[in-house]
Image 1: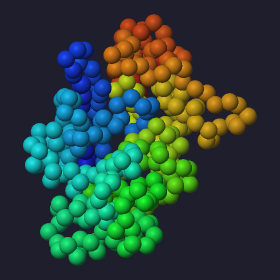
Image 2: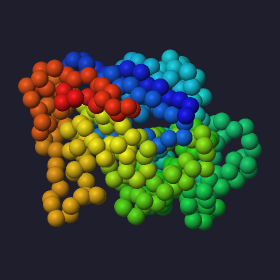
Image 3: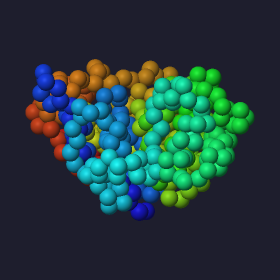
Image 4: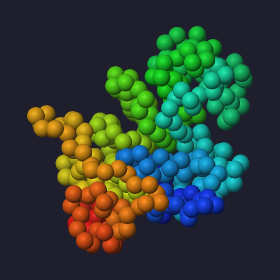
Amino acid sequence: MDKLLEIKNLNVWFKDEISKPLKAVDGVSFDIYENEVVGIVGESGSGKSLTAFSILNLLPEEAEVSGNIFYKDKDLLKLNENEKIKYRGKEISMIFQDPVISLNPVMKIGEQIREAISVYSKISTNDSKAKAIELLRKVGIPEPEKTYDNYPFSLSGGMCQRVMIAIAIANNPSVLIADEPTTALDVTIQAAILTLLLEIKNERKDFTLILITHNFAIVKQICSRVIVMYGGKIQEESSVEELFKNPKHPYTIGLIESVPFGRDKSKPLKQIQGNVPDLSEMPQGCRLSDRCPKVFEKCKIEEPEIKEIEKNKFVRCHLY
C-alpha cells in the first residue's frame, strides 16, 4: 500500500503565563497507508484528538507544535495558512465529535454543504445545490430536497452527524478523520453511522479512514490497525486481529477487559484503577506507573522506549 501520511516526532505543548509548558502530545510517530482503517484509541486526555487536530492544524492559538506531518511528501506543518486551505477539507477532511454544535445553527443544512463544495469547485449555484442534495441522499437523509432548507435544530443528533459526513466527503478527500463520531448517539444510530463510513470507504480504493475513539468494540468492528495512546504517547500499535488475540501492554489489556464483548458474562467487568492524571501531574517514569497492575520499581524511575517486539507490533513497556 502507498503511504499517505507520515507523522514524525509530533509534540504539542500548551503554555500560559503561570505554569510551565505542558506537553499534551509527546514524540508521537506513526504512518497511515492508502485504503486502510486505523483506530486511535485511549481514554479522554490521552492525546488522540490533539494528534488528529494537528494534522489539519486545528489546534487552539496557545498550542505550540513541533515535528513533521508529511502528506504525500509535503510537510503540512511547514505550510502557510493559504497553503493549508488547499489541503484542509479537500485532501484531508474531518468529522467532529458533536455534530449539533459543529453545524452553524443559523445556516440552512444544504447551504452548509454547498459552501464546502464551492470552496474547491468552480461550479454554478444550481450545480452545487444539486450536488449537496445528492450528498444528503448518499448519507441516508430522508427527503433530501426538503432537508436542504432545514436548520440543524430540526434534525436529530444522528441526522446531524450524517450531514457532517456529507460535508466531510463533499470534495472526495483521500483521508477522512472521524473524531469520536458516534459518542453522542444511541447504539442503533452508532451502528448505522459506522456502516455508512465503511460504505463510503469501500466505494474508493484510494480512501483512508482514521477513527478516533475510546470504544474498543467499535475498533474491533471496522478497523484494520490500532494505535493505543495514553499520556500523550503511543503505548501499543498492532493489527486489530493481533491486538485482540494477544494484547501486550497492561493499558491495552485493561481497555479490552473493560468492555463487554467477547467475554464470560458471568464475570464482572474489570476496570483500570485510578484516573488519567492531569498534564501537570504526570508520574515520573512510565506514564501508567500509578495505575498499572504490573508496575515494578524500574517503571517508576525510567520511561520505557517503544519497541518492535514482533513484526509490525510495537509496545512501550519495561515488561518487553
